Length: 384
Ligand code: AMP
Image (tube, rainbow, N blue to C red; front, side, top):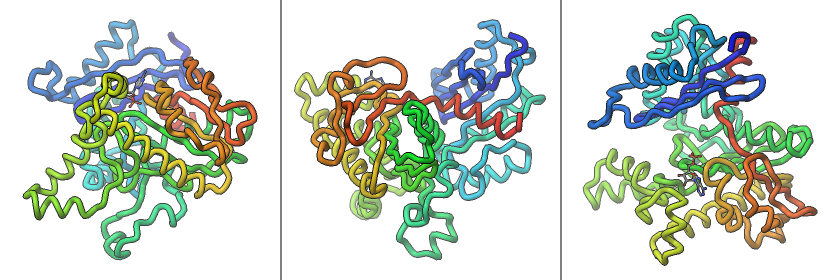
């Protein structure tokens, strides 16, 4: 494999670590893996150090020696960049310390990523390690969309704003949509619907996002696999007063036991579909709530953009579930969205159009590829 230029992309979650060895020029993935249940009782992977060592063993088993394969960088997905970090950033001790401070803003998400960076720097000390932030794409959102209408001084003191997440995916998909249509991204107005375990929507004018559904944390917005998305914030204090639930209990409930799972007992859309088909009322309600919220955001972003050229569906559900795509835009012909039902059902792997010819708004399915986008960002940051 000598001669290839490769980037190892690492995505460290609290109990899992995903890695992919990517050739940024061709976009080809040379190897990938997913190590789960880190730190769980019955697991053979006690911590992130062991997980990364496991990943390297797996790569070695595939015949890949990271010292000789042409590795030029390690790219780390970091969820929250706060106000400070929005460009792909070469990690050194000072920046890691600055990122550690930011963990307060994203206690659920940033610590495992930082752990991943720390361990990877020890194991691969001779290559640059670059952090790529999920919030980056939304850094320059217009103030009207980025600002919460709360006491301004409190917001400033505690850096409370709408940051937005899944930015790497929203940017990549909007670029791919423009490429698919063979039009410059700068001239397009787009809505991107990233529907996976976590879900978010964005409105993009040219290359600039002008709104997105996630906020200070990835809890706001659409209904997700286990997250509530938008709620009345008074629910938190109500439960605190009336149900004797601590703030942490409520936060855990909203992040881990809400959304589609909280309503139906199931978070996976394939299984949810089976439950609906077998007449499960709770599954049907969960699906209806998910679709209702999604349609509200589509309507909102049509209004925010004024004119929309293209709507793209992406991520696990968006790429694979034709019923969700159908129900998300059903009856919106008067707003310019005309789906071709046969195209929508026909499946396929790559980027594809699912709107009818002549639909004023083009509807696409665009597979996301966050690892490739991160790998290319690393190369860009290094000027390589
Ligand atoms: P992601 O977070 O992008 O990996 O998306 C994961 C989610 O996509 C899973 O939890 C499933 O609910 C959903 N998903 C994956 N494949 C399918 C499929 N063939 N049909 C419906 N939903 C799917």
